[in-house]
Length: 422
Image 1: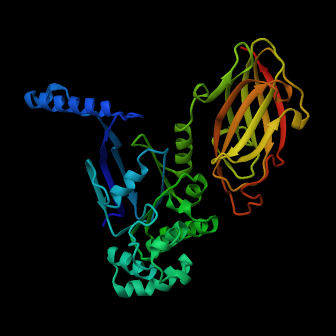
Image 2: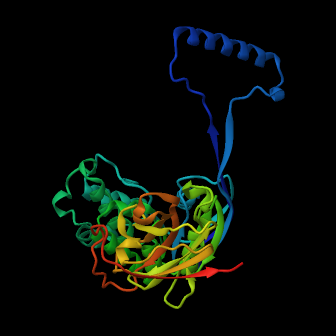
Image 3: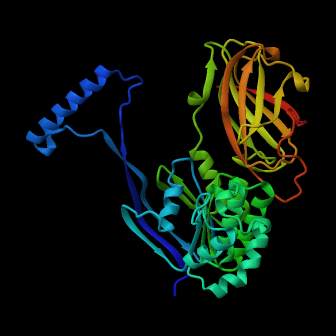
């Protein structure tokens, strides 16, 4: 018997998008005119061949296009990609909720999926009854479900509400019970979508630990998340989807880097303002302590932010940086004045290299806004929002800084720069 439990070949899924033109305000004369037009169109269509060109406005949308991959038994696969990349569609097909338009899927073993809050639960049934219902759907016998029952309830932490209809549960309680059922009833393949984000931080950590345990037991886990730290910590394989196609599959750290690079917008698209003949940001990147370009860092690690600026007329300017987490919550900022640094005024291209010693933070991604402008920030010459992204990986569990610190928190910084001759 092969150790391949999921085999996907040339998988494609097409949806039909219909476009309707809606009017902001409709008067009686508009209704009468529209009725006459529709009657005339129907009359014409009855006398015209089907290929006459009078058709409803619609568009084919391929959520997945020729996706192929194989997953071995016991692998924990993180599926990542931007919104609309096809992640949820792929999971729905693997869970047999949606039929593919083309292609083939082979699955070995029972599949338990947690795709959205309340999936597979009957709202009128109690938590106790839904545990048995879900177990039966998975093909478990009543004896098997009873054997796991106490463990499921303890993990979900819903003892007080076990005999309450789940329609009265909060979204967090729904997720706790649904994950507990899916993970403990011993499916060969466990599929979990971003729904875990509904739970609190402690429960998310417990779920990640359980999924890791499930993988070590030889069962397969598919995990969709926008939390790169969670993907890095849990998964031993990464699958990146881009515009419905397989962009990369392999080492999770490479997958995360590939995803972040594929989602990087150009400065031209991100630029908020730009004044002619004034200092302009050309490019920027992040380096690790060894001076290597990177797009992911360990939490609390030293890093350099390198930024190249064109100063055609030798104007005096300063650099302004704001650091945020992936939900645009503030972390810290950098200005020349904060660190007692002089303004820059060299003519031509200037490369500034700023060393940062950040605190340890439990965040998945760091975003950087950057600007150059007058001393004190009275006027920006160039301003770019989300100019850079960097994934943050927790090296261990000794994170000491709260997730939402007051802004700005203390972050040591030291600037050096050089004039680049062309």
